[in-house]
Length: 282
Image 1: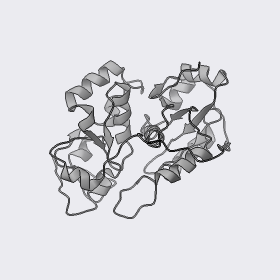
Image 2: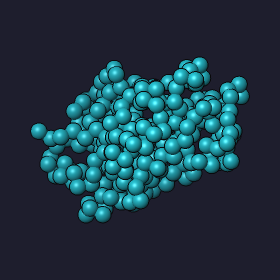
Image 3: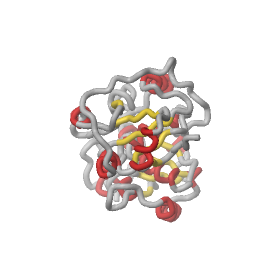
Image 4: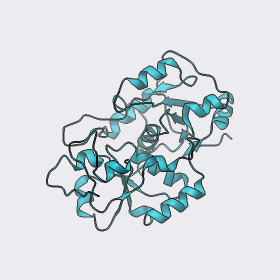
């Protein structure tokens, strides 16, 4: 029986999986917040064999209102249609990768779990690890072979919390902010109109989950680091600038065996859009 990968998969295992003939959907989620077309260009120049594009703006975000953050979630029903268009059905192994330290792959990973799909993993080390392991690249665009219907949404997927519920429970929850330290402290803010962080939030830059080679740290190391930072996982809420790199910390905790934490999808870009919400700095 083909094993299912639910957090990370290394390049060697992915090569074996693809050569086994198992049903696998590979998604390229490369992106650049400051150059949104960069992911498409990189994909066209060279992607994993058979990989489909999973673009942050087109596929992994919903409509913006000016008050719901820079990358709001689409309705689950709409994302289920997208997953079906990619050929994803229950039991099909999905592997997501990027070339940005899994910062965008983790968002796609989390969203598939959000609709109830468990057989999804991030390629540890991304495209660079694939090439280093001798994996080939293809050019051009791969057209999806859609599933017969939208993905059948399952209850019990990855949970979320909204801004009002978070604000009313600030004193009971442990908020973990995945942004770079200077943004968390409010020293700079290149993307949102207000600098700072949610009062009481703790800081865990998502790149601290990675070793020097760009792969995730061993699970035992991640577990020790998160246990030193946060209270039990079921009281942890993850956020970042727009609900993207927060998923990196969620993935790291899951890989470390610390399941049950929650995403605040709107994150800082939604929080600071309401001037009535409190802001902390430093």
